[in-house]
Image 1: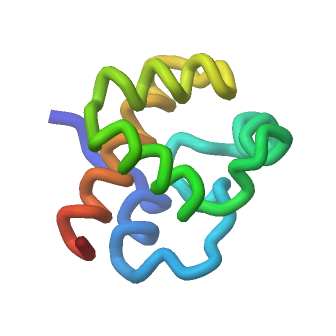
Image 2: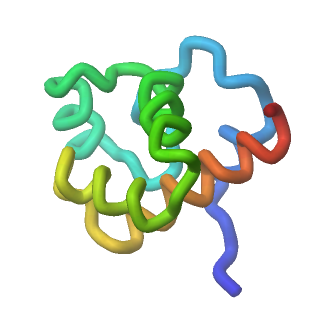
Image 3: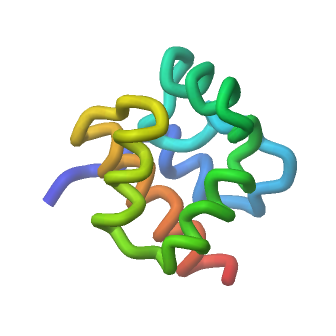
Length: 90
């Protein structure tokens, strides 16, 4: 079982509000910039895509890879972060 990062813990601990896309676990400066360039500038916009894909892990990970070239670990970290946030707040 993998442990979660401090970034993950901080993100899922409170409502999303206006957090930037780079507040998501697995999304750093490079991926964040790529997402912003494609219109995904806020964490809630990525959450919207996550929900459009019906919280499906495979679909979301593929989307993240295709959209910003996220590697497997980054895909997993971002998916887990959004899934846990949804479980807590939706």
